[in-house]
Image (cartoon, rainbow, N blue to C red; front, side, top):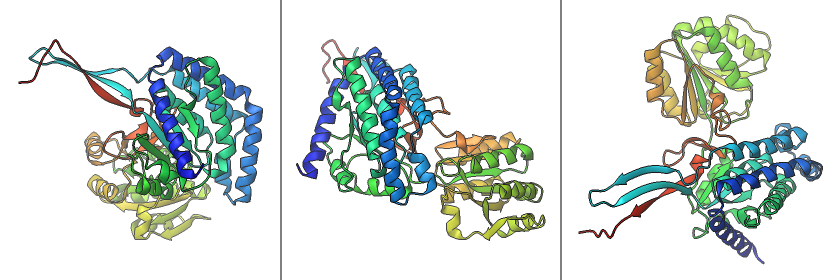
Length: 427
């Protein structure tokens, strides 16, 4: 069987499974999810053995220490996957909700109800726990899923999916075995073939670096929900509580610098730059953060003569860059309007925050910053499905049509209209 035939079979099986999934009740889906959670924990030894093969391959392939850490499965992460499945089981079923009801003057009753999307392809890198997260969210929302992880995680992903499928089949006789499928080959050519099958595949969601997401979006013939990068900002206003601002900035930058909701650029109001920046630069230097600043931020920071401080002059491209590392841009601006203008021009419409005690400026920032998540006196690091109370997260979207921001169960549904008549005909 050639690659084209393999991908077509995969997609056909998923479409058939999606029809069967739509028939399962909430209780039946939850029973399957809880059985899957138990099975992952019971199969921990085999999962770690499969993962060891992937870790060996990843190290030989030259993966960085950070990427190897994302790839590794240990007892804590396996327990985390199981916990995530149980949390999804506990969430309300997003399918069948009545979104709108109306009766027309002619007596025709209309209902708008939530429905599964159908077949969802998830493309992601390194982290095998995404296999469990994505599969469980799609399953609970009635969607069949086709999972395409990185070649470095193929053994882990296959066994996670197999464990979940077998547990689902044991838990319910009508569990459709093709509801969860893993693309079984590492060939890159599989992706454009799969994403050309518009008669079977309804949606694609890529998770990973900008190059991966752009490659998927460029080749796909099915709709793609995505965010290209996370160039997130914190603006420290003249009326900010500076201690609060310092804590928010440190959290947004250094807690997990490699994630998409970490801050990449700090904007500071000129009125507080000389007070705020020197002690902050000291804290950032202690965390080995390289600073790339404009002339005014340099003027404020250099007075302190901080030891081991890495300081460079920012160039135009830096303001557009998602570093995913211990690197931070700093710019001094004059007021909230200048901060908003900078964010809307250089940002990626992901997550941005203002720190201020001035409610008028905060409301202006919240209204005028055109991003998926905008915060007042809080870290950008909260843009996450778990932190938003959605349970496991399928991804984050910066698109404006359809889902935007963290995507959970509700964002994995579409809707349809039901019309209930008594013989009405249109004049």
